[in-house]
Image (cartoon, rainbow, N blue to C red; front, side, top):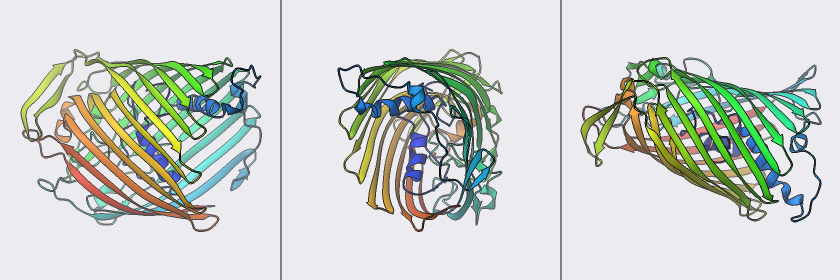
Length: 490
């Protein structure tokens, strides 16, 4: 992934959208994330450094343009100096905060059937869960933090779709921050286990698709006053559990297991108090456990610009080069579609590499009033896919949050992705297509019922369309999902 992941994180953006409207909704069916290096389903841990940079320039209105106003080191600005006041249990120096939630969902298409070759089947899903936050202030400059949400999905009618094990939310992380002078060092361990394929746009024809991801690494932020330099390294392991097809058959996905090593770097220049520009770069290698897929090298480099146009409006623009280059000789298959209803067969390639392309994305965030905030993001990216060697995506997303009353909010999110896949892995060619479109619309409202109890209700619509492939069942489907969520803070 790119070193600067402030915008374009569609999966986490939608997950955070649920959180933002008062719901601890942990539905793992979320769109793919932006990927410029490898393709873990979580944002790169370098985001912590990049977020600190973003917060710094957003809060820099205290600077006076054209004057040399002294300021503390950026690293020092984010030093933990006091203990939080909201916690449930204090065990020695460690503070814990626990919460529990229960999500009740109704889906009219739990198996993601296309309605022709596979029937649409409805069900009610119960998802109880536990949220855990912990903080250990080792010293005034060193803190250890843990955040996760653990849950389990129970289907009332389709017990074969019950969670095979405990699920871990996409934002689960163990993080240790160390401050030394003008340096901030972050050691992290990110982990996630999800098994719902809905809105994993590349995946179709399956009703379960489990992936366990673990990302371990470090990043360093160096504050040079007018210049911020970050560098990081991550090692990723991804294990894919056997999937269940829409017809109920077990699909062997062992060929998707992989490990990767990635280095990221970024240089940010503070041009004015409200304007930043810089350069980001990423390089990574991917190694698969099976010879059915090519090992690969991915590169990405390009400039970015961030500006606070007004007190309420900010924009971010980035672009550059990114590429995927195969290192092996595995044969990968790409179904070739002609138009929207026919194909001429498949193409095979043998480790010759997939070449490079360009990426560009832009985002504008605006606070219309103290009650309404929204963001629009568009982009074009070349990334490694979930089921393929390479995916070229063009996307657009709108997110809006409206504070209706002090205890009630309304959230709206719409996302559209058009994707072209190259090099679909042979074992999965019957469960994906070379070209697909994914539309997702979310509506949710949250209400603070009592001091500790909150609730939310929502509706999600998903539509996947794709061209037909000879000998492969239709990979398009639609799904309507209604949910009710209750969260209790102990």
